[in-house]
Amino acid sequence: MATTDTFLISWIITGYLTLAGAIAGIEVITKMFLYYAHERGWSKIKWGYVGPEEHTHIFPFAEDWKPVKYDFRDKDRHE
Image (tube, rainbow, N blue to C red; front, top):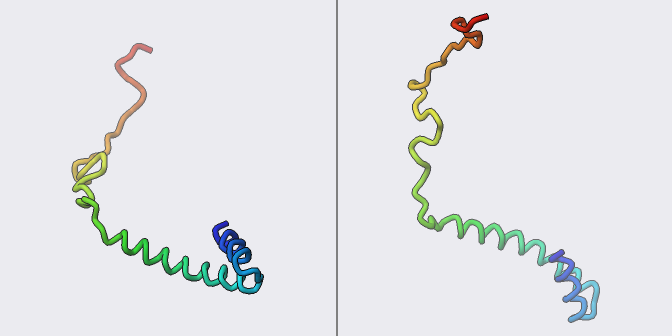
């Protein structure tokens, strides 16, 4: 959509379809490079990022978790 907008504005200003097509084609290429540079620049800023927490799981330590064998048939109930 943005390239179409650039093409139409270039066509209106210049009056030439070929020139407007060239401008729109160059715009697509430069936009990719500018987007890449923009994202790389923003990724350099830490914005107060501390890092991942030490433990983010329900069971923080694997050795603390032990499987429990559970029998769903309650043997103390009256049948």
